[in-house]
Image (cartoon, rainbow, N blue to C red):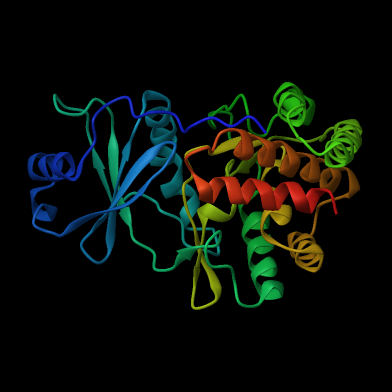
Length: 293
């Protein structure tokens, strides 16, 4: 496929900046050790002492997404069966840095994209139960997202552009068949449900072989739960997908078919926008392979 680099940071971000922001706005935390953890598409994340993280958006779009987390995660966290990074402190824009930022809990573990669960059956059951608890009707003020939770045909342009660059004609034809079948599935009929919006193996933590937390809710939105259910193809083999679906409890055939289409759409997006991010590229390749099984 034709691949592109991650979006560049729109402001200079460094450990020194994190230290200065803490000194000015949360001086009781400024003496803790700071170490970079990840530098992703949207955020720079640093360890802060033993129990906290600092998250700073890298670009204006990411700052908008972070504001949604700040607003909604504290309300959702209490009813979810896995930990989520509801902010414990908020940072305000200032002369040195233009956007809100946050201090969130540090959850031990490694992302599932690097270190998968030891036992896939219980992991799939745990994640299915988490999604069942999350996917409840959202209020009218829930964040809108033009790319996640929408009717699946709205992703057609990106999918077809990406598939045009698949070198293997057999894989390309098989993926097109999956896409056509998923796009033809009946649309969801019901109120918009709360969604994580970006649920893939780099946003799921595993500790001591078990799923321990779900992180990075920047794309939180409301809409079709098939968007989140796509994680079944990005993380689990067929048996795990069946276990997740059973634990979720309410994915009919149309929803499951759309979820497979979402797995294809997101995998193609990861493959085409991760030239300098091997982790995301590997997630895309795994998901792409799984939907063709």
